[in-house]
Length: 184
Ligand code: IMP
Ligand code: MG
Image (cartoon, rainbow, N blue to C red; front, side, top):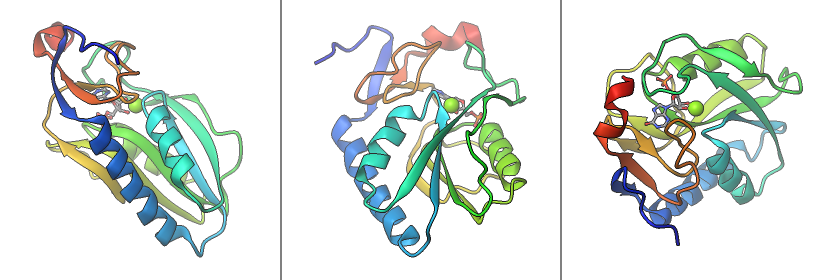
């Protein structure tokens, strides 16, 4: 059992709450993709790696896992708006049913960029699965599977980080604002 770090304000979603929701999302995806072949999960590094690891192990339909890494934030919590591909997919997604798996939608810039970019590669279909969405105004991003809506605060744990710290916390927690205020 890890101790609660001093820069954590409060736990928003417990390990149990997250696991139960991931079960539900996996069941929905199974139902929707049952009759389609070629399901291709695209996990967005680094934030989505734990969510994706849990999701893929719950899916009892055939699928392939691949990854992309994008960057928009650097080390801070403020969005620059510009998204860059740091690592691309290994294979062509043409004719595949692509499901983007992302940790969180904040401004919506990252997901809209990814959606636009992957759509141009002519997949058979393209949907999005997002664990968390902040309650704020966002770029028009279609989210097909959503875990939770959360307040507009900086969260860490379950893959999400602050300057690469706190990724391995088993729960999702709010960071104390004084920790990141200076980086905005
Ligand atoms: P957006 O482009 O503003 O929607 O930001 C999405 C990306 O920023 C996500 O892929 C995360 O990597 C990161 N991000 C946004 N908000 C948080 C947060 O509260 N904690 C950790 N990462 C975040
Ligand atoms: Mg991310």
